[in-house]
Image (cartoon, rainbow, N blue to C red; front, side, top):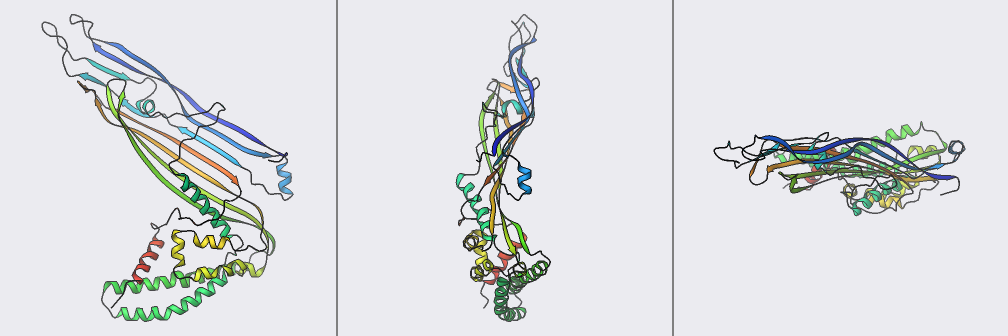
Length: 423
């Protein structure tokens, strides 16, 4: 950190103190000759902080606005942590003893216990959720459901995408011309296959014919049309010294559930604690570069684009790119000639939703529930981190194969149909 910058830590405390107490009253007699009355059996005061708590830590650059106007570029580290704990919900009644107490000539009765939660509720009081802080007022973050290796792969995937694309024009005429040549080479055979299958009545043959035509359009004609459009857009772009931001993204979601069985609610009720944690992580990498934009570059003639064509012409290279970052990795090592990187970095956005519920409530042995025990509670974490610099490019399995995407599914089905042999 330079002498002209310093770290700043801020807190926004929007918590509310919620006072509660688990109170148990017993319905009983002092002895069999006395009347039955409700008397206090136990009282357990409990106070909870609910609401939200936010910490924000960043680096302040002295004279930032003047220096920015002078052309300096900054990508400062930053962290923002937010924890939100709701008030919870739920209801608790009580238990009644199965056996009667007192016998003739006294009136028999069944001893009962009833519970109350004061200003709280079973969901809040049994979930163990809090807004945890250390001695410095910083939030103590929960453990991640996503493993360490997966975190590293996400950052590598996003970074590799950025490094592969920086230095490339929005259009790539070299690749388009190669694709046109490839499409022209396979079009006659596909047309011949289509004419042959049109005379057949089989469902597979007709489906294959449709798939072949789709693949020609998807990977031969459509990219060419897209690049022609990009070329026309490139003619409108400015030339000369400009700054351009290249971005890459990777995301993952995981859900974890577990149950803590046979918990005891203040001596009288057994129940199960159910926890469900849903975590989503999005990594966004970015690179800001300055370069001299020429008309040829804007139209799609770039050295990096030309050098990347061989990989695109490898049969089914696009299928490999569905599942791994091999193509991006190869392109990341190609030179981005003329591109001056001003800054780079990545942000990690992490969302953790913790849900809690009570289930399977039942009375202890010898007693029966007089009413239900229910409870729910939710704690949400929003964590954002900004880190200067990019991790090294690498080959990793992609975080999302996008097989649920309709276009990707159509691609996959068409490729499978293409491989089916017709006699």
